[in-house]
Length: 337
Image 1 (cartoon, helix red, strand yellow):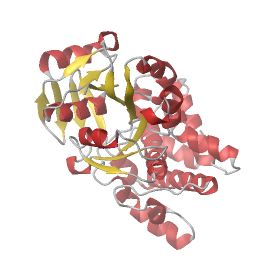
Image 2: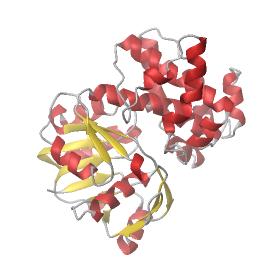
Image 3: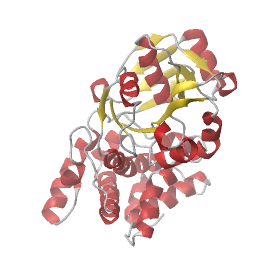
Image 4: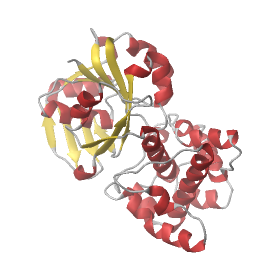
């Protein structure tokens, strides 16, 4: 088989490094020319909660040739409308694209290549780019997990894709994949934007009273929308996040607040990718994470006031009207963005 990771940024580099270290064929593809050149010369270097260097086959999109049986899609979802038509030409007739993007990316992949050629995967770990050819694993190694599945029932590619992902962490094939995807969406919608607008790591978010309140409220707005949509939110690493963090009644609110740090256990050093984009002056993916909650809330008449405010704040930061700073947490709670 020919297999590629398209979007070999921080997480793609680490996944590719683990796959290459297993002896399997893998191409790491990214538009970051300096990153490609460094990996070609020195290999992919993984730091943080792992420490190893491995030779990899790195290339830019211009260097792609032939077709692939499996393509792991790990770019930002906002680029899908541009990337997927191109990837379609590099996908074997019976091949599959497995999207590891955040949010709910599967519909765009299905639109491009069809449901039989699409798998989805909710990723349960994080990473940062440290330098050219160097990525930091910010989650603990034993917390690296993947929830793999299909939006349209069984898929013959599941076993093969599972084997590749197992090079890096534990893989669960989800019968209720939509529920698993929603579980990850809810967690991302709670922690990623708070990390993005404050500059805090996930550990700092749950360690401070104000930001922990924000994360819990965002999480419950996601639960409200999912409930109204009839979505059965799945487990994350065996945990029922709805039972743990649903705030119905004052006693449950207190216990849920106390339990929030358990939602990111093993991932405290992680800073959201949204934060990295905002710091670089780029548009972040908040419209494809919290934006899903907002749009469905509007459709089903569910109020999502904090979600609305944090989306607007992120856009203000994108436009240069606001700065990333811890004080943003208090402004959000005061309803002043």
